[in-house]
Length: 113
Length: 110
Image (cartoon, rainbow over all chains, first blue to last red; front, side, top):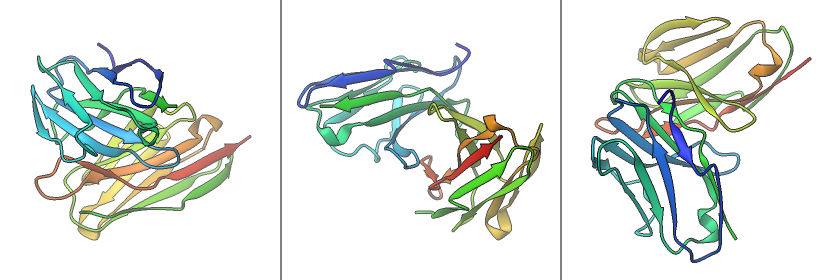
């Protein structure tokens, strides 16, 4: 597509529930990144995919967080047993390569109540 | 990991004024990017500029990698320039984690 698409744009869930956040990168972009942004802060790295594989998942805060990119295009960030502290904007970005500029999606605002 | 510091943290401009935003980083970089986050939260890539100078309309950026800083120039500011400006670079050698500065919040008033 023309840009990075993220769905849903907003998600409200109850504490303890499971959520999935979807990212559809720019066609042909091999690198895909997930970041998390809390209010008043800069984005923080979560995970980076090169193709289908997670090349670096060291930013995932704990084992409740998991992400996949099975066909090297669309990626899904999965959060189990959500906690109120998971509330944030989750941003996805893609790039043609790691040494090039990123294009970010509009983000998914996750609120855990 | 690398430290990224931005200044000033806040800036208020009259429409039409010019400004310079600064980004200092603690180590050599090979991926330096400037982003604008508009009031609706969308992060827009302004420049990919690990070194040298680039211009795009009223915006330009210069990175002096040897002295570990980058500057973003905004000329003839408009109200639509309001938002937060972030610089970001990779966390270290072999890392593909972007480390963001805390941002400069720009408010352009008519």
